[in-house]
Amino acid sequence: MSIASRAADRVDIADGIPSPLSSIHTVLTYGRGERIYCETDLADHWYCVLAGAVRKYTVLSDGRRQIVDFLLPGDFFGFRERHHQYFATDAILNGTRVARYPRRSLEAAAERDPHLGGEIREIVIEAISRSQARLLIMGRVTSVEKVGAFLLEMAERCFDRREQTVVLPMSRYDIADYLALSVETVSRALTRLRQERAIRFVDKHRIFILDRNLLENGRDRHAGQGFRETYRADRNLTAVKAKGLGRS
Amino acid sequence: MSIASRAADRVDIADGIPSPLSSIHTVLTYGRGERIYCETDLADHWYCVLAGAVRKYTVLSDGRRQIVDFLLPGDFFGFRERHHQYFATDAILNGTRVARYPRRSLEAAAERDPHLGGEIREIVIEAISRSQARLLIMGRVTSVEKVGAFLLEMAERCFDRREQTVVLPMSRYDIADYLALSVETVSRALTRLRQERAIRFVDKHRIFILDRNLLENGRDRHAGQGFRETYRADRNLTAVKAKGLGRS
DNA sequence: CGCGCCATTGACAGGTGTCAAGAAACGTGG
DNA sequence: CCACGTTTCTTGACACCTGTCAATGGCGCG
Image 1 (cartoon, chains in turn brown, blue, cyan, red):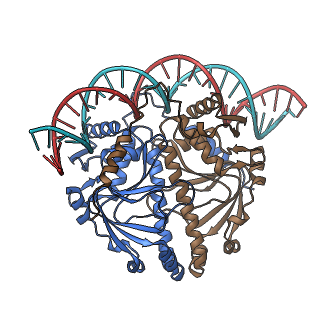
Image 2: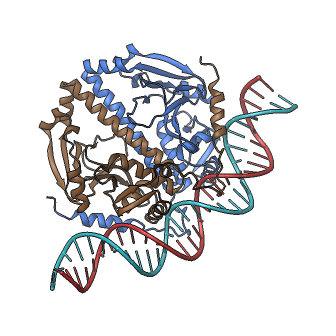
Image 3: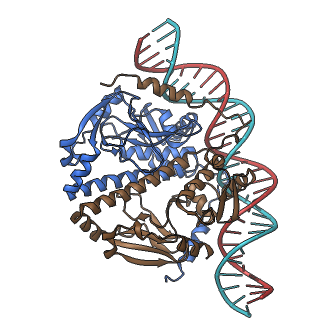
């Protein structure tokens, strides 16, 4: 609950919502773990997080839960992707507040107001930005790198300026399902980063960053472990060489 | 080159391009490995693949190249995400043709024509869809599952109806950098899928799918390896229980 | 033909998942 | 306010998987 109230009063995102939308939204409040929409619901609303935090996920065929996005105050979601893959969302914190917009009204408003349409495009592009940044995190090799990159992402999205700490509203399980690691590995990676003096725990959900460089790249961590330093350097060379071909 | 010509004549995506855009585009042709734009370029154009294939990637601090998207005929790219993270793109095949639209003209056209604006939103949402589907692939645990899921993704995006095969325009190295695996592991996974009669090679870049189920989930593959079957089942239960809390 | 590049296969070491156990924090009810 | 059960988080031990290193063969190209 300390987390919930903290996240709630820390952020005020009235300016994050395009003004023309304010007339057609409904504000809903959810409890921790409560479903906002599930994969079989009709995709008839857009949403914007006002306070708290939301997870967007799917349950894979093997029973694992893959979280594809954490939504924080100011983030929009619910623009339903066509195609097969559908996701469910639920609240992470008690008192998570969400603004809901009827899709039809939204699209009608965008048709009438091209400027609003542009803002919506920006919102969607922002979501792509998050998604592709997350792909880079998932692409990292070791668990310590993944967790370090995750902390840096959260540092930009969920930073408490007063205390200079990164706020992690979600549980270790959520982090694990977000990074596709086991809970134990996430916990070990955090312990490791603490031992290496890269971070310091205020409590389990608030983290003080001591050394950004140590988080960014696991440099020096692989010393003596036989990592192939020049691994893909030559591959880049091949790309450079290929670039030399004339454009037709 | 056999791949290039094949991909070129297989796809005709004139209908994929919103008609109002046809007047303001320029068609460019690239050779294999040639740069289309790099991370330092101004983000002043949108692009649409007409023929061939394109990879969008970034080079991480440790020198590894992470591919975040393969662009195939009909796919748009270049809506530059704000924020730090920038990507470069280059052609995968000789004769890759790309339509380029000046960003300003595009936005001006969208302001004038709300319907076009809606189409552009759809295009961007489509890109999110790809990105999040890819996150699911990255979230899979074993290499065989990753490669299997990748083949299914490509089967939907790059299928040769005449030959009933999946066309893989990219090299094994590209696949490896896309899935964040080593080339050797990708190769081993493909060999394994072939041995298990899930796929059959026509040649190195064309694959016939024998058993979709084997690709979808590595079922039976973990038999006897002590996989935790009920791993996150109970976690779902906790979510269900939490769901029971009343909404305020 | 020889030279790169791509693809495949084998051997070994290190990292992560699993299983297990324990500690800490939280919510509930007395 | 405290006791208690539940959930969350942490730590340890071991097996499997993937990255690394190495070697080989096929293929296109100059």
